[in-house]
Length: 292
Ligand code: MN
Image 1 (tube, helix red, strand yellow):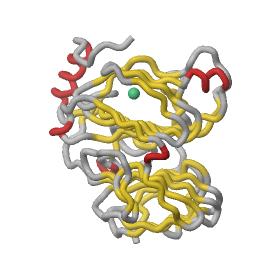
Image 2: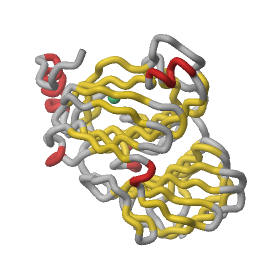
Image 3: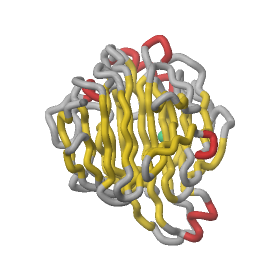
C-alpha cells in the first residue's frame, strides 16, 4: 500500500487570478508546497495547482476572468466542475469548457491566451468550481508548437466502481485508457463517489502521486482526509484504496517525475534563467502572436 507522506489542509486564504478565479494554491509553481517544507520537485511533473473551491460570484454583465497573458514551457489543464469558462488564444483557437469538461493546453514554445467566465453563465451567475493545473514539459518538448485538446466528459473513459465512477482524463485506470495525450507518463482521474463508494487502484511507487478532495471527505488508505485537503503519497508502495465518507469528488494525479532543473518566472517555466529571460524577450517582441 502507498504510504501517505502528508495531508495538506486547505490553504488559509484564497487569492484572486484576475477577477474571475478565487483560488486556493496547493502547488505553488515555484518553491515549497503550501505551508510545508516539501519542495516543488517532489510533485513533478505537476507545477501548479489552483483550486477555485465552489463559489457563486453572482450575475454580472461584464464577464469576469483573466485578460491576455503568455505561457511558455509547460501545459495548462483546466478542469471545470461547475460553471463554464471561455478561452481565446493567439493561435486562433477558442472554445468553452463546461461542467465535467477538461481543456488541456500545451503552451510549448509560447502562446497568449485569455480565460473568462462564459458569457451566458456570467449573466446568470451560479456555482463556479474549477481547477487549473500546470504540468511541466521536458526540455526537448518545451519548444513544441502550441496546441490544445478539448476533452469533454463524454469522451473520457468512464469506469464504474462500487458506489461511483471514475472518469479517466489521462493515462490508464485499471486497464481503461483516458483520451488526453501527454508528453510524459501521467495518470489523471476524476473520481465521483457516493457515500460508502470505493475505488482501488495501483500506481507506480516512483511516480509522484497526490489527490485533492474537491468535494466531500474520504478515507484514503485507511486515513481520514477532510474536504479540500490534498493528500501527498510517499514514493513507497503502489496500492491506493479510497472509501468515501460522504458524497465525494476527487482529483487524483500521478506522474513520472521530470528530473530536470525548474526555473519558473510567472507564466514561463524553463530549465535555466537564461531561457526564462529569452522567453520574456520573445513575449515582448510579439513572437507568441497577437491576441486582442
Ligand atoms: Mn492562462
